[in-house]
Image (tube, rainbow, N blue to C red; front, side, top):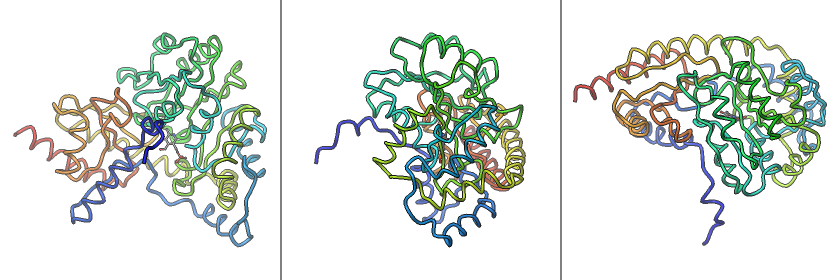
Length: 390
Ligand SMILES: Cc1ncc(COP(=O)(O)O)c(C=O)c1O
């Protein structure tokens, strides 16, 4: 069988592969602490689960409109208007099975072969994968540890060419936990206006922020029609397995994206969308409690990592990841991640799973209990001390 050549350009997400390896070790009776997964360890709040059960009883079991149920699109439009301080109409909203399809559909609708897309590196691996799958050119924008994992706006501007069609921005960021400050976003907005390109603003972690207010490029004057906002329910409401997310974009692009949905999965699960309405319009206390718990874990894991030999770690401002610098362990990122899983029973990801600029780092998710985080730190400490002695 000969497969399409484009498949050689299609990447993946290493987290799923590491999970499979960790589970294989567990089947052999080994203990593994899971710090590789990018999902809240909390249950979906009860009122959201109950809304889904009610929707099932009420018969929300049929196809719905491709862009999403009108009531959910209205709820999203209100929510985005409230949280970003912009005006949003329901015909600018497309509901998808998680936030991820917005990357795929929006880039499919925007990019021609040879168009250039500037994207954060280290960054969510699916950006680069989709850019290359579509035959566009992936232009990495390095994130710098010394800037708390923000990029340098001058460096961004130097990467812009006449072929730049899209810039991808992710704040709060996976894998570094970095949050872009107002000065950087101001510069990004000004550069996008001047050079006339689109921005995909991935704000999936917008509610998981520990310092300051979340800022969105979608609320910048002069960027109207240029910003595709990606957000969803997976991280905010601990709903990763439900698959529910959305994009907000100018109405013509929204129509193209909905048409791509018609061509692929037709529409998003109807009863899950009903649960989404309950999530946005219902009480938000559990989200706040979850973020408070993440903050405690963040403080514990950062303090613990900074005590390990050869490891230094900055305090991230958002999301639920840390991105410690491991260069002084003397090991490469992949080598250390592999050895930590096999020898110490700690599953983490190599920084290079997020692009070449992730060399020298690991990504650990602290969406795990404090006792498990403490256990992982002990295991890592013993492992690194033994290595140092060897
Ligand atoms: C930066 C970023 N964007 C988008 C997503 C996709 O989220 P969803 O599960 O809603 O598709 C993730 C998930 O890990 C992510 O880290």
